[in-house]
Length: 180
View (cartoon, one colour):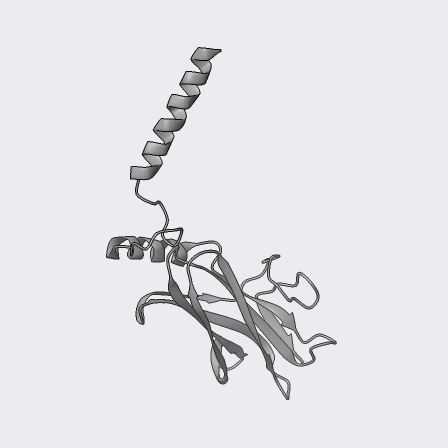
């Protein structure tokens, strides 16, 4: 029994020493150290490729929201302080050109103050006074550090994001929306 107690005390002491001298693994968790340019680039690459980075249509011409499209984006933080912005826009299907075309009157910019960790969702709604046809959304995500752009990514709206907040109906997520 005494041997087990000494072994646990020795292991605990070794763990305390290792924690005291080991560098922190993540920024923003009790450290004032700034990430290196290489660490910033690596964090941005991870965020740009993340499955947590998406855009979806979460509202489409419903009884509670007639002639409206809601577009929601989700973006991961970098693991250290950075500001994030999401520019959300609407594109309409052109029967003439057979492609989606940006609507210059349907764009909004959302800014998140400095965030370090977690996944963040924000969204906007656009109302159309007339028949708008088939629509989809775009989201351009940008990460800035000390006012300097360190990364960006763009996504078009895709379906099946069951974790999208504020859907109408609840849990609604689509790639496109038709406003009649």
